[in-house]
Length: 60
Ligand code: SF4
Image (cartoon, rainbow, N blue to C red; front, side, top):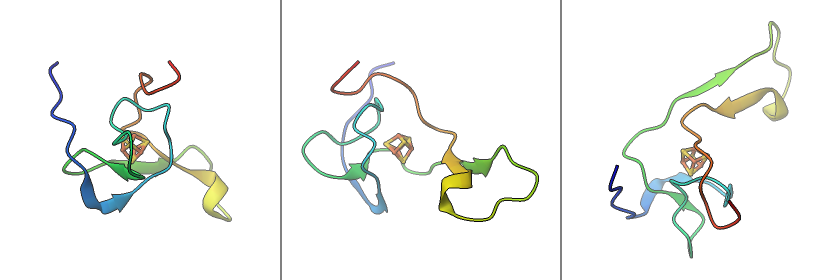
């Protein structure tokens, strides 16, 4: 897929390992993302994840 890497300033993200991370800015480049949890009873932010993540950023 030829992904157009333009920052979406509505989605702040610091996951530089993701192929959708806007390299020099801490934003996502997708129009929308999917966020979910793998836990039955999430208690804080560590329990939720961006499920739109795909490996392939700066450090891949
Ligand atoms: S897809 Fe998720 S993890 Fe990847 S840059 Fe966007 S918000 Fe961050």
